[in-house]
Length: 311
Image (cartoon, rainbow, N blue to C red; front, side, top):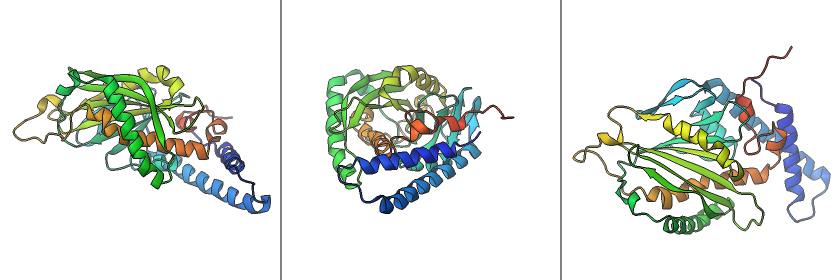
């Protein structure tokens, strides 16, 4: 396995050059911009190369049994690659994303598929699911839009583009028997008149102490293609004995301050920030993916793919 350094460098330089010419202002003389552009490209390339190297050093290819904190195990199927934190967090930062202490790791396809999945465990207590039978998808979408608009104020302070929710890619669905929740909202940069939309396909597995979140990120046009991957990975998440939803003890265990609907209409607003950060990264280096191996979203899936040895 090798990192496509030459192609990545070319992509970064091209992206920076395009960014410089699309600001709406006259570009400074080439003699003053070229060194700065090359320096920025080289710096980001070095950061990404270091992150890729760290990720590849600890990656695990399925089939594999992956422990998820003290809560569960992921029976990683064949065809998928697991990268644990802190290497996964380093990789996320190199792509313009932030992580917190809920972040466990990331999953990538072993082939050329165009997606990645972020795995987290949020230990906020037992989440009551009795509100799922009464929720209204239209009301949840309205709350999600309003919350996202309010969160844009904070994004603006951080220099991150605002986003807007345009609709459901999949309305919230909850399976009471398995305690699994799935939903997905379509998002785009605020004010963007183009047809480019991103999607976070959110799947949750509820447990005794909180919930596991598996967030698959891809292009909206590819979602139907990769939904089976998300379903397969969600099914591969299994809580350990004593940590399952059914193990809840009302006399001793903490109950979360919010119900199941908040995972869509409240907490979800924060999760959409991941897509906002991804958009900021893509906006700045829009051509990386095209040049660095052909993956339209991240341009990094191929670094984990086994290569045929060259003569």
